Image 1 (tube, rainbow, N blue to C red):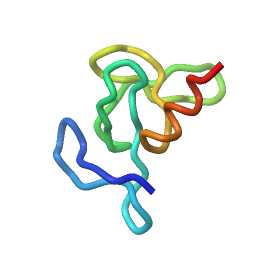
Image 2: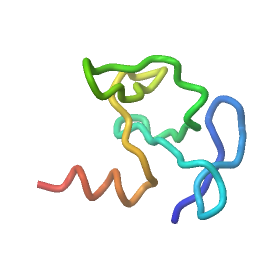
Image 3: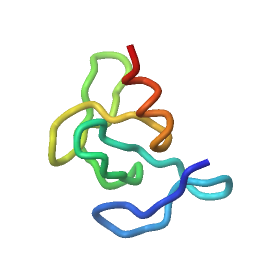
Length: 70
């Protein structure tokens, strides 16, 4: 699993024993689950990147790149 540091609070996230990370498909920054306060969706509230205002994907670099393939 991919690990890294939150863009806002610099907390270590991702990996096997740490909290999951969320990554923006536009700016590629990773965020912890606590920093982005905005959520979208009527039933399933999904996190939104604080800078780009685009729905983020859970996981790391590989999961975001695989979801962008045609």
